[in-house]
Image (cartoon, rainbow, N blue to C red; front, top):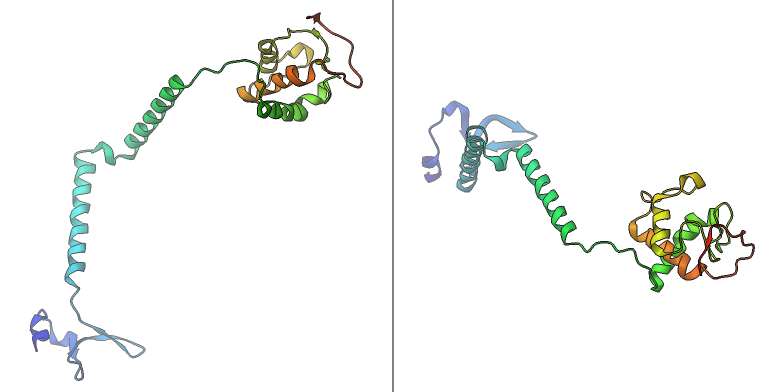
Length: 203
């Protein structure tokens, strides 16, 4: 009886009372023997529905009336890009400048040997004796014999001699590793078939 009093007044033609459970059933809502109850929504679900509508209204007012910048994707994108650029600038300013100096540690020389084998050996031979490119084991150098000289050659290339620029193919560290490998591990060795000396002799 109490359950009936809580129900809103409806047209009695729209529902019927279950004689066994006293539940109110909606007419013409039956499928495969299953009847639909005419129950009210739970209070918590109603309040969630009301809250969702309120949030949607507030959001729409902020977006379309006040043009809140934190809700406009284009503005947010520009802000994120500006923050990214600023962070990169700060990181670059704080980073230690790259120094071209001879590397002698085993790890760097091992990486230099790997680069030499994959790229440089095709023109200079694996043992550095020279083929299309000059012999790297003797004391004769075409473009200088310091680590800075060799680094510049690998970085900028010597197009007229067929030497490619590797600044876009190898990182600064990789270029320094391979020239350090030449000076530390190949120079002064005895290749099987050394190419004739080229360039100026350095003692």
